[in-house]
Amino acid sequence: MTVTNYRAEPDMIRAFGRVAVLMGGDSAERAVSLKSGEAVLNALIAAGVDAHGVDVQGSLLSVVENHEFDRAFIALHGRGGEDGTIQAILSEADIPYTGSEVLASALAMDKLRTKYVFEGRGLPTPKFRTMAAADDADEILAAMRTPLSVKPSREGSSIGIRKVNTRDELVEAYQVASQHDPIVLVEEWIEGPEFTVSLLQGHALPAIGLSTDHVFYDYDAKYLSNDTKYRVPCGLAPDDELRLQELALEAFRAVGCRTWGRVDIMQDANGEFWLLEVNTVPGMTDHSLVPMAARAAGLSFEELVVRILADTLESAHA
Image (cartoon, rainbow, N blue to C red; front, side, top):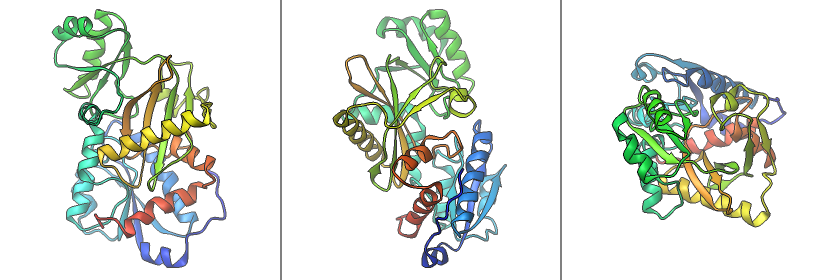
């Protein structure tokens, strides 16, 4: 990340005290989390914050045992860090932390239950089914139109996701996804452009349009490929971008999230938007979307992480 001259206010720096940047973890997203955490740590230090990196491995309880920090910036992705677990541990220890609280984190991490919330609130989301065994393939194909997306319900970074058209592909994709999570989500594939909207302190940042030569915006496209294209401005007419941002805010609030996050949305051939998922601890690497959206809104990376951390001074879980 580019270092700027941004410095947090002295009073804020004193109020933050000693900050632990939690990163790593033991989930399938450990490598990405380490990159996110390192970027956040360097930015906080550049902004004048007394920040220290903590590579979390093994028991999450070790984070609060004999801790010597006043608050935590959570840069843990995936299970343990994004699903309400570390949030619950920090809450019980009365340690303020960044991002969404326990229940919202757990809900957003579970794509299936998030879709139930979207449906209950009348928010547009692709038609879906759960798949509990390979034998469910025929029933699913009879009820839904192909192509389909098959994904573990509780993984992030597009891990375990496949696009399928045939029964054999569906069964194979189920077998791959079920290695990550016994709950496998199958949803109708939306053909069209993908957008992501980052949220910060109750406001939607400029939307980003995504395009890739991959079948979809998968793990490699997100974190490794230099060929992925990001459109900022996103290419939508102003009214459509406003509609997209409002939908993202609705989804974020419906799940009960707070401070910051990201909502992923598809647009079909008729111009309609469809919600995919809510991310409560998005990536903060050099390929990541939240820092990109913040830059488009005139925020440096240093100011972005300080603003996220600042909510711990007033949050209900502080």
